[in-house]
Image 1 (cartoon, each protein chain N blue to C red):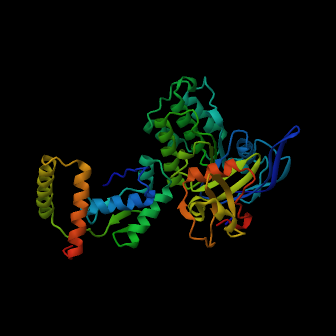
Image 2 (spheres, rainbow over the protein chains, first blue to last red; image 1 turned 30 degrees about the vertical axis):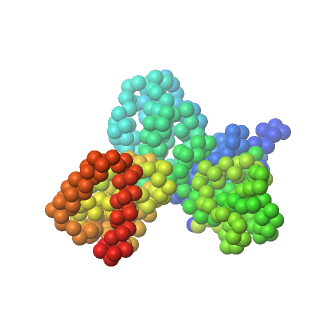
Image 3 (cartoon, each protein chain N blue to C red; image 1 turned 120 degrees about the vertical axis):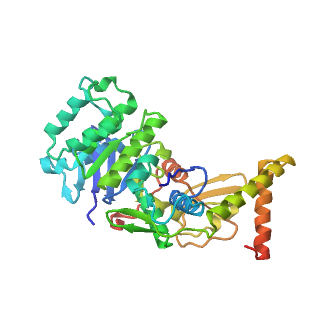
Length: 295
Length: 130
């Protein structure tokens, strides 16, 4: 299957600083993809490149197998919701809908109106007077009404209260169930990504560390605890993500695979939070299966 | 119809929680053969989870022969779980509630009652009564 997003050695430089470098990725279609990393790691840069808002400084980028260029047909398949859900604050919701309909050929106006009324969003109020949660919902409805094949969301849940976060996620998940589009969303609140995303990409200091199916990542990584002396007896080829020593005890996060361990090690499953934290704390570690492993 | 809910701290994976809740509803007679399960879109609109998780739970229930998917119509309950009649269930539940009231009366706390119930369940299973 052709990947939704495929990049090879993709990089973007601002003057002398590389915001993103050596980014080689293949993200499968039809997934809900979490893009995770510390602030300034390159998440927004990658999303801006995929949305066609930035040009790469080096490397290549393909969306659904085709290079991204200025042709309207290429961009019509992509919706992008920027950070802080940039809506024109003086436009009413109804005016924003008109704006979207005039600019986008595939616009589904009936769906947008039906959805806005179901969410009880007022159409005659300027966007600037809506609550943060309502603004996020309007922005998401506008992004979805374009009927995109690829939906890019930059920190859609930041600055939202828990109820609004749940409502925005529910709207997003329901739309995925109906339309089956590919979603890439960045966040640094990992608990929001559990149960919603099924593919994880971590990006750290401008480089991609992990890209894989979340169930598979959780099934292959294990947290080992044992006596510190046992560190020397770990299988030499065991891919260790991180290890810490505390007194007599050593803790190791490793991609265990078929490796056999000495019985001194206690083996525990890891949560998505633990997995992400371990990788982000170790910028040098990576678990990239390579661009061929997309299913 | 069934309303799913999620317990993030249970340690049970989300899809298994959905499977267990359907089975639980079948055992209590809240779901019966012919009933329709909510669609994936309906479930995720309430729970804000990935639709594939719902589909995975429904596939597991289908594999166990409890439900069947009819294209374009939905997923329907095929058979019930547990052999007891509603009358038997109501009688046993009444008796159990009476027993629990006397346990509270004897000064047992909720945890004590749970431990006692689990122990008695193990005992009878060992005797082969279950």
